[in-house]
Amino acid sequence: MKILVIEDDEMILRALEFRLKKENYDVEVARTGREALEKLKLNSYNLVITDLMLPFVMGMELLTYIKSINSELPVIVLSAADEEGTVLEAFQLGADDFISKPFSPGELSLRVKRLLARQTFA
Image (cartoon, rainbow, N blue to C red; front, side, top):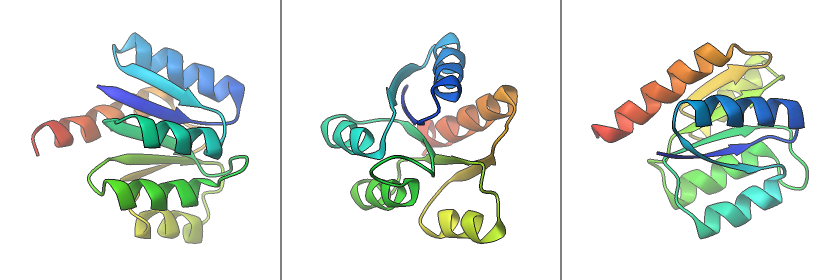
């Protein structure tokens, strides 16, 4: 299973990449929204995990783009901004899950497994 992780905080990015690779996922990373758009145009993924606050292209724009090219591609949104309006907007744009920072790596792993299992049986 191939996962794209989009996060500009290097420490969080490395932690996510390490955890997911340890669980035998094929992981690609992007540090900016622009880099993520390029990867999304060239590759296919089974899951995308994206921060909302990103350089160049924001997470909400990425979410809209992802759902426009593949409405079935599961997206987990990560954000320190956990205000109700932000969460609701992410879900209205098609997010499959929303995790507030800081988060538990174990909880993230369970949510990834759940979404990928749902995709496998769809």
